[in-house]
Length: 257
Image (cartoon, rainbow, N blue to C red; front, top):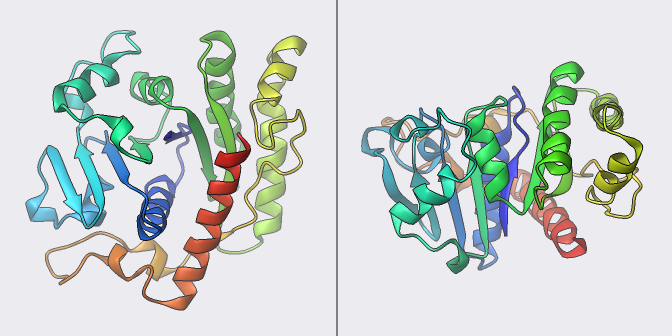
């Protein structure tokens, strides 16, 4: 199962990948993270900053392939570049239960490659920037429709400091607005590929809300730290319960697809 995220200019994508990776790994699942960010942002959650280098890194049972996109030519409209990159690493993604792809936020040829390489896609929404959210999701729906990408949309994960219900409502309305530019027949087709995959959108948002807290936010493995902060996520009840609930929902949505 290969999962990527909508190309939204919002906080939280890398953090949610790390939560899911840690939670799934704890349940015995084999997890691979493909880091395409030029700053190797998510790699810095698992590997001490001074030890980060392009290539294959590992943390416990999680493998991280760090491939900053500027090392390859993404300058042309080629949606198979990521496939070529993975062939070069000689890593077989089928050896993993779950593969997550992270990249620099924004609609680009890099995010299009990530979507083309994936089976599923998710969104995070952490602020009330509904216009940016709608535009990012709209790109995904257009890719699904016009480029015949075999993607299924698993839903929206809400990251909220206050008033998560309002943000969830905005995310729901943003999905509806993102569908409007498509022809009617395309709208019906895409809606059946959005959780719960029956043409309705009422449950598109995850029930698990990710709170904005230091213990969930400050995850960089700096030189001053003895252990990577992701290590503690499952060691404390208040973070462990959030991650377990998120993983439960995630697996349920994957199984329904």
